[in-house]
Amino acid sequence: MNPLQLIAFILLVEVVLYFLASSSPRIKDLLARIGIEPFPLGFLIKRRSGVSTLDRFVGSRSARAFFTLGIPVMVVSMILFYIFVYIVGIDFVAKYIRVASSGGEPPASPLVPIIPGLTITGWDIIYLLIAIGINVTIHELGHAIAAKAENKRLKSYGAGLLLFFPIAFVELEEEDALKSGGLVAGRILAGGVLMNMVIFAIASGAVLGIVYAAPAIGVSQGVIIEGVEEGSLAERSGISPGLLILSINNTRIGSLDDFLRFREHIVSNRSVYIEIEGIYPNGTKYSSTIYKPSNTTRLGIYLSVVPLIFGLSMGALVTVNEHGYARLYILEEAIKIFLWTAIIGLSLAIINAAPLFITDGGRFLDTVLPRKLSRPLQILTTIGFIIIFALSTINILS
Image 1 (cartoon, rainbow, N blue to C red):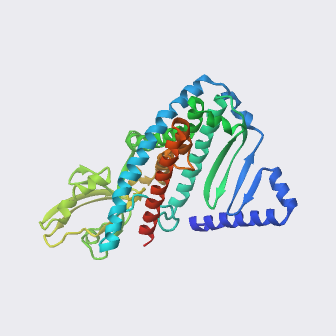
Image 2 (image 1 turned 120 degrees about the horizontal axis):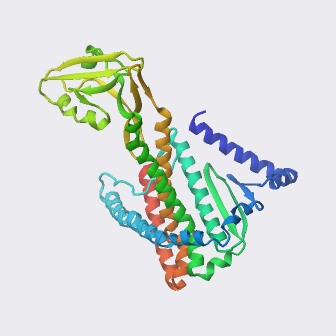
Image 3 (image 1 turned 135 degrees about the horizontal axis):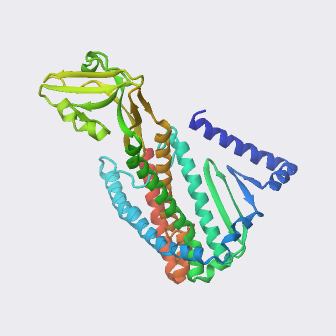
């Protein structure tokens, strides 16, 4: 089952659940007893009992101290929203209007909507959904723990799906507690943003840890030849797909960057000798000095790279010994998941901190500013965000 088929299956399950619940009160009651509440294009798994698992945080001074950090994190995230979205967004809108009126190449969109099959493809769709699920759950858990630390009761909590996007929620028994202002409301409202930033830090640290600690355990970014052009210089030199390049001109190749340093010798219009050593998965070794004439600027090879996100890539992760090499696909996929988790964590923190009507940032602004100041600011911010997002979507779809 490919990612798009999996999404189609999820949507089918949602439609069937909603149809069954709508057509049969008995099925609706049965689903309600196990905590499932279907709605059009989604469902919630809701829990009203079992919240006692968070009771260990009731009145916790250390939890309150931790979530106090969320207030400056909320403010910084709000500033980042204006920097990333508005400073870049206003420039985008100006360029977009200019291009629309006089023609030319459209500017790059500052916001990229998530459209499976278009802006997100392949297994990145699944990694994205995993990252969203982790972040929205931890976000709401942050609100719940912060509320417990302030001795506030939880009415219910849960998670679910809206279309194919994971969602989560926390309902306080006393919603009016957030209107009291002060540190109590600030800590509860900022709890989600703080937890998203924590996830961003952990996931980013995991990626850096894997990349930089890998050599210590014998893992390197290998340059593997995925394909060889027929009749090319590489084919005539006996190079076959699957070759891991170990060195060029007696210089160790441990990453794509190492390989690209020798690219100027290959694409130059000079006659050069290129000494390549490598190994195949079965342990067969390759060593040859290739003569590249001045009228040839390509070896005729295609490299196997690991596509990450936003056009980034890295070399394949491999371990090498005298018996050959093994590619660590699981580690490569783990890096992708951590990267998506970090990006979604940062994005959710910034978007939730934005002073919009539907966000924690908007409610936070209501607690720290007079309503006559916070409401106009939220209106202007919301209108601006909608314009930038709409034009970005149109720009990408066109």
